[in-house]
Length: 151
Image (cartoon, rainbow, N blue to C red; front, side, top):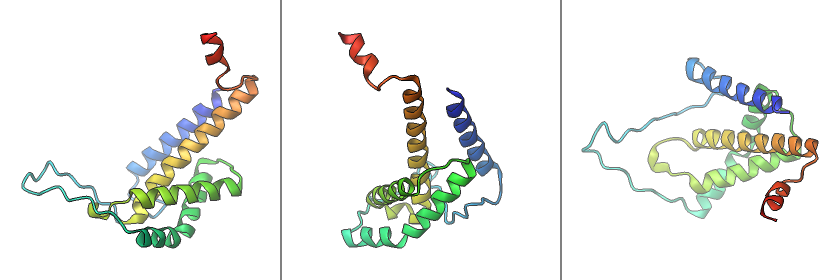
């Protein structure tokens, strides 16, 4: 039962290690800028700039196709199959969340920020789906053990 979760964790770990060690990434993420404020104490930390609603809406519209491409590429790399409607929902929600949380003062592109946010959301959703499937296979309803423990 835990083999699916273990396999998924191994694939994610291998994926992270291969991205870290390879010079050329297959996902073609551009404009990665790491900022360290400790190295230059004279430099002030930038103020967080909020985007207007129109700017956020435009980001969502512009990156919708990219989001689907990134999601399918990651799912194919991890050898995970999901329903097309589920992927569309996940990408849409992740895109809206990323647009709300994006801060352009960190000098990264929205595409880079969205890639890492979408990857995290996909990992969370796949883990939840595997956990739900294992719970249903065991015949236990989530929360059942909790209610028995307090009775």
